Image 1: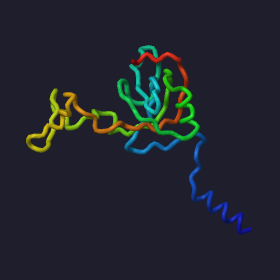
Image 2: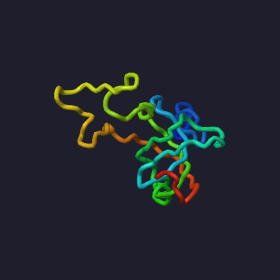
Image 3: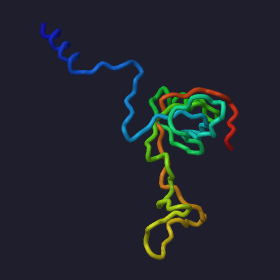
Image 4: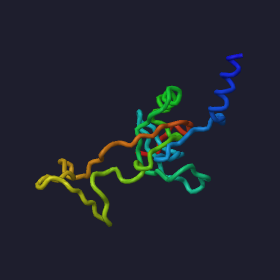
Length: 149
């Protein structure tokens, strides 16, 4: 009797969930893309014109550090160096520029200490702040040849 009441209370409190449905945080977006896996890094390739319906914004040219559940990470390891199609969740803030400073027109403005230029670290190239993370939920093999070099 007590078990039945407890089950009914839990059923009333917990909302029903559809199988396979994921909750995407409000600061993130689900994306689907094709690209190459190299270790734990996914580099997105340019979208093909005849590719059809796309999931999420265009992430062509972006690279992401891969985070995933164990079964998906095993697929990532299996397809190291391969051209794949992936689905994952990325923070919206990670889809913009990943460089130090802010873009103003065609220039980049950096506020820092006088006499120290944070854009110059010896290479002359702006340095990225950090590598964005993709919480990968699916990987599908497309080809053993990776078109991105």
